[in-house]
Picture 1: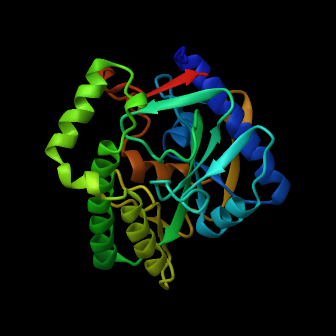
Picture 2: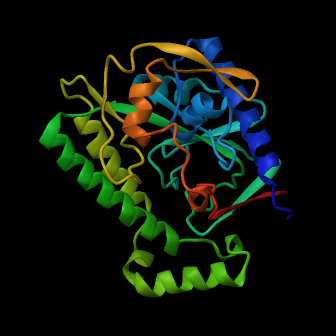
Amino acid sequence: MKQLTLSELKALSLEILEDFDSFCRSRNIRYSLGYGTLLGAVRHKGFIPWDDDIDVMMFREDYERFRAEYTSERFRFIDHTVIPDCWINFGRVCDTERTVALSTIPWHGPSCRTGVWIDIFPVDKVPEEDAFNDLFFSLYMMHKNAVRCRRVHADPKDCPTLLTKVKVAVHTRLHPTFTKIDPSRFIRARESAIRYFSNVDSGIYSQIACTDYSKPECFTARQLSEYIEYDFEGRRFWGWKDYDAILKVMYGEYMKLPPENKRKPLQNYIRFCWK
């Protein structure tokens, strides 16, 4: 299989985003560009030059609507409610016809094969101050263990090089107990915690479905109350209006470019290939 170039990966990701956007507009489902995609829209009017993925964020109620209603002739939505062996707490709209993803950190089991995707992150209400810090730390540790568990369940077919095979073998030797654990166990535990706290009476929101960042990210209801359209690669997509406050929480001095040695794709551990 031939690996996609960065430009091919971006182009197909953009196709998926356009399909997602068209569906959301047709159903009046709210969403915002998120993380590096929002930063790219603000700073570059498109992809961050070295970036290779697309992120969107949705309030939990919009995410639930999208999950229940989304249909497409070209792409497929997947999360842990759609297939039982999905090992992440957020969703992805995936290409399953033209491409395939090879990864030593699989995000689902053998029930399907997925290729290029965009990430769909639900945003939940969270408790304030100390209670949220405790919740975040628990979710962060569950996330780290879930990733360790997913590594030992990597399919040998998804380890195309000798180096990747060695890495998986070493990791499995270091964490033998995870071979006996279904990765879905971590997802169920995380989902229970997220759902329990999402009913709190709070004006604070956070993306806690994927806690691979080291400190809590909190946003006020006011910061997430208005939407505007952003230019992105010559198209227009929705995003929260108060990008300055949001990106400062996520990245600090977001207009400052990182050092050159940090300008790397976040998904560089995944090989996206044409079928």
